[in-house]
Length: 349
Image (cartoon, helix red, strand yellow):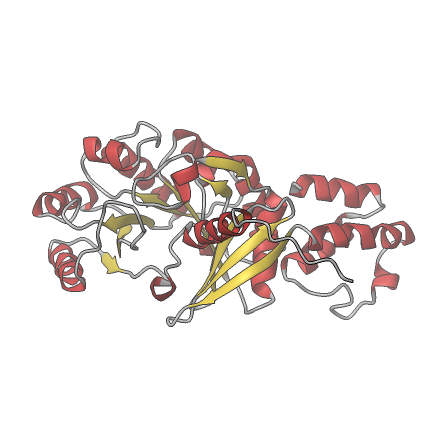
């Protein structure tokens, strides 16, 4: 379901603008219909009241939590089942954050990421994105939403921007607390500049070398690191939000002195912060995680060279919960069950 389709159904049932906003607010905050001071029968027209049970049932059926994997850092990785049986991952982060998925699978195929192994299976609809937020809010407060889960938001722009519009209005998420994360796509940059609600922007950089970027992100748009940073700087100066440059640190691949020099060259004087995230180990991927001492040394060196750098650890390391891993394990478990020989029951006598 798309959010604009939901709005049209509400209007067809007799909802005015205030009715529509109230219903969307209650849904996105996971609140019951009788929340607040006014009773629903005195607030909604009779035709809307008659239609609401079926609409609410459909919204309830958009997504459900299939599994919860709590981390020692206070995070919770959620395996979320959609109505058609596909699954995506959401992550409740410390300090009231939530990471949501925008696609089932991903077409970019980043070599260090589990999500893209099977390619893109389907887009996550805008209402399914909000359903992830509503499910999370049943567990704890959510005041920040980051589009850093499964999928490439720039490849699902209509649904993602529709969800962002709702989150930034009745969803009550501050605009700078909505984070659009992308590998960099000219269509996304153009669209973000035009939108009424402008989220903060996170750009996957990972290397300052064009050839290595093509190797690590084989199906990303053909933008060089310089072009990605140039578009990021333009957006940062327009919105007043610093860009979050993402750098997955791979041992012996993008952690050398040559990359440090490249980072200083690209990011000096730019309105942004470099988030260094040590690689989250994935089975069957030919990369390894640098030692924490190496990561700290690299961050200190960049700080001394004038680059605002934050060393971060991916949430859920202790539960092997990197993006796509929970979904992959669940799929493998289903395959194992499906492949077991059939054991016929002994007939009752």
